[in-house]
Amino acid sequence: MQTGSLEVSLDCFNKSIQLDGANASAWMKKGQALSGMERYADALSVYNESIKRAPDLAEAWYGKGLALAHLGRYNESIAAFDGAINLHPKVALSWYGKGLVLANLGKYNESMLALDKALELDEKLASAWYSKALILADKGQNNESLAALKRTVELDTENEDAWFNLGLAFTNMGNYSDALLAYNRVTDLNPINAPAFVKKGEALLALGRYFESSQAFQRASKIDTMDADAWYSNALALRLSGRYNDSIAAYNKTIELDPANAAAWNGQALAYTELKNYDISIKLFDKAMEIYPEEIGFLYNKALALYELGNYSEAVALLQKTVELHPECAKCWNRLGLSLAKMEMFSEAIKAYDKAIELDPDYLEPWNNRGIAQVMGSEDFVEALKNFDKAIEIDPNCMQAWVNKANALKLADRGPEASSALEKAKRLGYQAGSSS
Image (cartoon, rainbow, N blue to C red; front, top):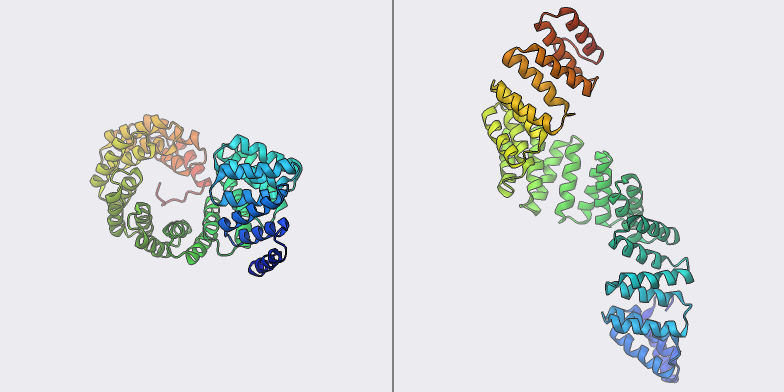
């Protein structure tokens, strides 16, 4: 039985019982063999035979508790574990078994008491630490759960599930570096654990390691070729790493598996946008919007593509819808202002920039764009300079704002000041002839 030859061991115990049917230990061991073969109903019957012959055999009560737990008969299971505990109260495994069953019944406080008792008796019982960690996580005690998971993997370095949950705990805390180490341990232990490769990819993505992230997602996709989420994540990582054509292929696979995945249609559209193939990207944004017509991101992204094509009026219409649906979107108001400015509707553009600034006073772009609109719309250089100065106050190294300030000063016939501002821009990398 210790070497895993359960069928052979079962034959031996049967022979032993034939020779000595009163041997309670033989009946108990037969129950263990049957449990190892997941024949829990048969095991329960055998444990009862053992207890009938020796009511004080704690191991039989413990085995009975496990069999009942596997059969979903939790209250009877607890009674059996209590029988084992009454006979031998200092056996940690009986307390541990009782704690697991109480957790399955949702009696977390009682479960914790039982698990703590098991750990008091055997501080190195890794499975009890792991169960305690899961209960603490369910109760929202994340720091305590993390500590219990760390203790689990210290005691049982090959506990794949514990390493995985440790990774999840670090991920939930935003600690992606330590999460990555935990997921790496999982994939070392089990190279075909697709969910671990997905989580590994997500951690790498969060760390900005896009190429490595795509490799992890590709590995997950090879293990589970029908996992649309893995294909989507792979496509995202490829796009963020600048591999747009590969990204498009991965998005295609995602859509093939999950045609209603609006984010995949949107992501593929963004990849085509990066390739400056705006006509195709607009059609794909439309597919995403068919699924979620009022998703702000899809509306905004399509507006950007229209803007790049010079379809400013259509871009304005979309952005106006965007800010109607989500008036708190400062970025949307700023982009609306830019589109209106392209149509030379400078007063309306300034109102849009004002709304963006109202929502986020430290948002540099609308300050800078407002200054440009003041120059081009009304030649109000004084007001424009205030806006450029505000942008520079937010980021003293904003080259664009220094160039725009220099141009405004020049138009206002303030040559020496203009030259000084332009020199500052040059020190920040501006080259004459580049766009401001």
